[in-house]
Image 1 (cartoon, one colour):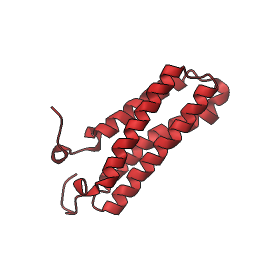
Image 2 (cartoon, rainbow, N blue to C red):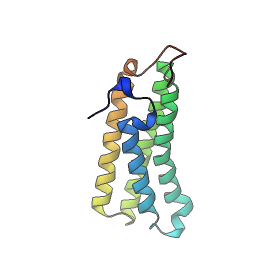
Image 3 (cartoon, rainbow, N blue to C red):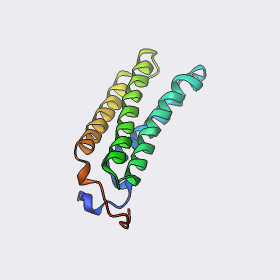
Image 4 (cartoon, helix red, strand yellow):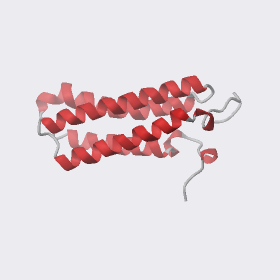
Length: 135
């Protein structure tokens, strides 16, 4: 049974966070096979961008007292998701990913970005102005 927004007590319960975390974990696994020469280039950049999506979601969750701050962190998460797709495109071009792996990951990040866009467009559903509210 899906959890309602009112029941979400932790960012880890957000579907978008779970999707971002799973995608980042899959990218970590796949990028372990990239050439050693890419360790400080493509591999590092790709891993940082995908992990940053998750980290920005966690930060956004803790900034829900202000719609402006909440949206800013969600926007950062969306920008990192977009960056990740660029690195995925390079990985495909250089032959480090198979076409189906690339397509699946691009689809994941497209879905993540759509979820983030919905949250950005409707911050009032998420923002809690009461400073005494337990998050």
